[in-house]
Length: 109
Image 1 (tube, rainbow, N blue to C red):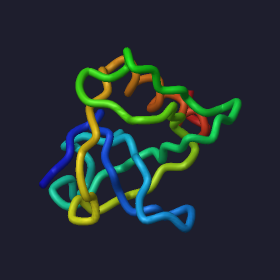
Image 2: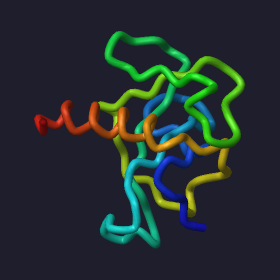
Image 3: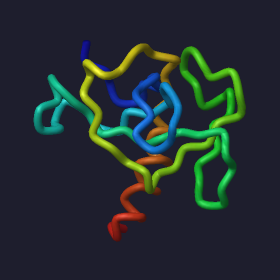
Image 4: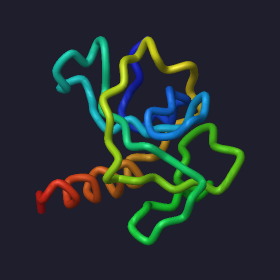
């Protein structure tokens, strides 16, 4: 299954010793190998000053059970086959906020 930009998914935890963690899909079908993988920003329940807080109103559908923050500096390429489910979908404004923060962390804009 291919996940679309804005999808909040349950993926493998590449950064800590947990079974999974939520991620926000930032890439779209223009990403190389988009049929196999996508770029995701890691989400956490740990509040950090530079993290993007997700509010219930940011979700176009679904949601997460706990207050969640997206770390735009923690971007990983995750294979669709390694994602174990979808938790919801963010509206485009929330995705743009996260993507702009990630680009800024990379020295763009």
